[in-house]
Image (cartoon, rainbow, N blue to C red):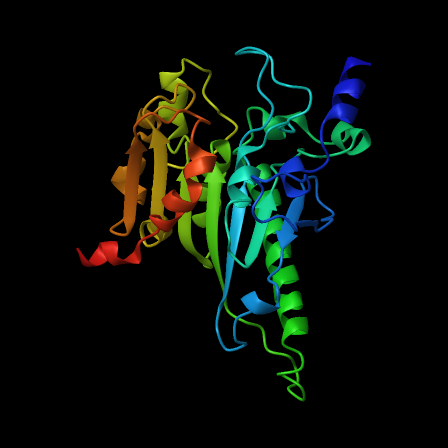
Length: 296
């Protein structure tokens, strides 16, 4: 009964996307209703924001953190859905025309769907191959939805062109906390990621679990594993000096193999795992993924 109550009371979507509040800047997200054990929400551009049909589509995707807090070091939550999702708040500060938000596997599900969702997906295997496959498929479906909507938007301009062309889609992938670790793993296996940004993310999970004296995540992959593809992507990774959940040292050996010449790491004074990120996000986002770094 306790689990059922907890599952029912968890939100089915981030409140920041729908609530009426003067601090909300860019609402208008809609549920894509993926047939997957995770949820995705998409915001499409208005008429004034639409780009020319000949230009690539710039799609920004945010990935949520690990979600609900563990009761202690050994007791995970019965439902991983976050009640105060920080990645959703970051997304709501982002003016990008095409913008999507991904929950993590098993987040935002109703009680019946959650009962059929494998708990390892928010526990030891939260960065494992199954979580990675599910999240990668979610990105593919978001991308397909964007392409379909783009074609509808430009149908008049493309009248008589058969078949309708597909635009090039460039993805800026942004992950918070554990969602940042997952974003790195996803980027290492995709060819459409042109910008990778993480916020307070354990980029070397072996280093992170060691720092926090946690059991190793043996069923998960480590983002610090060498990846030639990652080293070629523009990247920015943000940490806070006062973060005790994911301290800056959690980057471990990531920079040695995977940062590349277009990568930067910023450690911001006075920030912790949640404090200040949302309010500062437009400014920090503008400083991220500077592609001129390789020319230095």
